[in-house]
Length: 125
Image 1 (cartoon, rainbow, N blue to C red):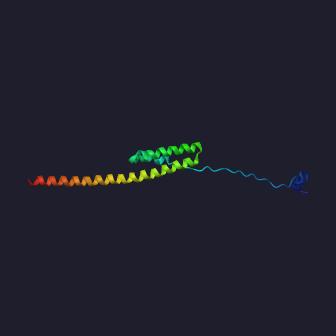
Image 2: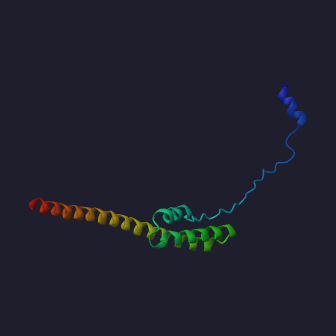
Image 3: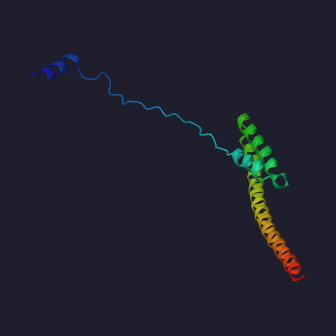
């Protein structure tokens, strides 16, 4: 007898033929609700036309509070409102900034032409 066969015969066969059991653990995944607080803060600091950024920031904070309490539905509602306000603030802010730049350029060109005409009229005399 080989040494391995001797050990098997001494130890014997497995005592039970029951299949190994498996344990299944169900982990509930938390629904991730983005509160858009960074975007709202950016809009509050840089693009706060008509106070839309500040209002979006307030809704973002409310969304974060609802998420901490565990009210996922309330958090989603506030986050959706904050997202809409952020989009509105961004669009209005970009349009107003472009409009301000165009007004500044147009005004500068108009002032240049007026000053040029004044200088040309003074040179005639």
